[in-house]
Image (cartoon, rainbow, N blue to C red):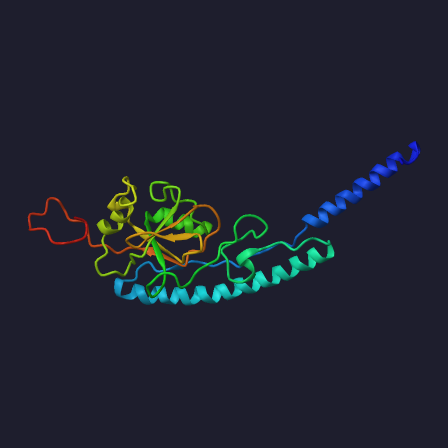
Amino acid sequence: MHPPHNQLSSFYTNHTLIFHHTFTMADNYPTYTRPTFDSICLTGLSKDELRDGLKGAVKEYRAHLKRVKKAQIKWLAKARAHEQAATLHPRDFGALETVPCMTATPMSGYREAIELGRVPEDPALLYAYLPTEIVQTCVDNRNLEAVPSTYFPGVVLAFELCPYNRWISPVSASYKYQQRQCSLVEREQMQSFLAIFPTDRFTAEEDGVWTRCITRGHFDIVAHGEMIWPSVPNPSDTEWPTATGWE
């Protein structure tokens, strides 16, 4: 039964307000602010120093992940309190409830769990080798979205090949990309590295190559730095060439 005509305006206004209030309550989850991590710059370190530098960066990052986990727990408590107050069915927040995640927006998208022990190396990091300008943009933006498809062909490519490896060279680094059909990558572009931990969105492929199924989204960069390569040989040099890694 409808209310009298002279009460219709009040009736619909009140019910619209009730509907709006219900919608707002259901949608008004607390804001999540993920702690930020400043990538450790290791530019200038020699190969002999890089491994220790990376281990130090990992130690700082592990401390950061403790803060991330605390922030997740605090946010989840507020989210559950909101659900109870609004009589909402509890949402499944996936890995956010159990382990530190890369996720900056838990209300949307995938909750990406960080996996510290998957890579069989110490430190257990993965690396990408890129032009310095691209690496710096990734560091500044705290994501990998600035890397063009020349290097990340629809997926993130990262390698177990570490910057302190005795035999690493511009050729060996660029060849890792070329093996994945990134034929436009050249050795001269292997200027800097970024070091990251894999997440549950990474797949271990063959020959120490790892792929992440998307390139979007927040991503912590544990460390970065410029590579120190031997000097490029001078073509006019009349002496016999020596092994430099540029051949």
